[in-house]
Image (cartoon, rainbow, N blue to C red; front, top):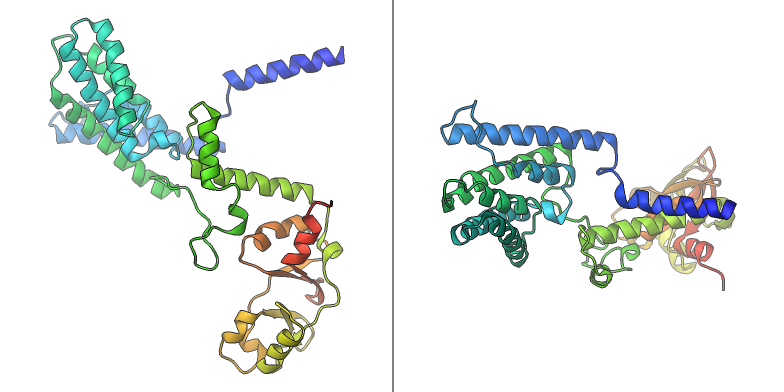
Length: 361
């Protein structure tokens, strides 16, 4: 009986996720912002079009598919289908396709079908696929009740409406702190090279693109965005897996340190003689106040305190999972473990972290 209940729940879960997908936007505030942006976008577009074309404030000149474009522009601005060229090009190209078909095919039913199909083909060829473009082509054909529409319709009001709506969307998202036109974030190398950070090298963007191609169905997601999501998911899984392991369990305890008032030459001698990459710096009271590495020796200064860098401080009970991002991203080579009084307890290097999280054979 319990197995039958689990099967029913599994089937219900699949159907539920298929027909009722996850809500657009990470949270309620984002959805509220999207709604506010759409309200402002349509209102400003209609107002400006009315003033520009001499209809006045009380007679906005808007085409219905602008409402569908607003959904993409303000609710899912990272979508490839919502980028400026997709929106502008898709609407204008679809309008031109609809006008051409309406002039050639007198039957409205056949013309409507051909207009939508031609619009999809034209948008795909021009790399400006935009779902509301199908509505633009359809409404162009069905609105031709008094004869074929003029090609000027594709520019006024369609192009003017779209250009204004995209402009409002750009301004809105800049004010809201969103990336639009959207460019997938890339973690720059800490060494100033073109190589991505170590944790971002697998899977590569090419791997993701090939996987998307092999998937078969078209997904409304940019390969670079999907790559970032995959990396973040992998990191979260690693953090969860190693969440119970603490810094106190993997740290090196016999740590060589140096006082802040020692000469730089002494720090250089210790680093070279002991083959160290990290040398914690202590103040006169024995508290950790800095870190010295090979690169710090190139700075000008007579005393250790003059060239020391800011350390990355953790505690004995800090989860090892908290070190994964800073120590694998290339920005940090080590973490200094201290007590509540900031006294040195241990040191964790990238090698220590690798040995702790690497799977055992």
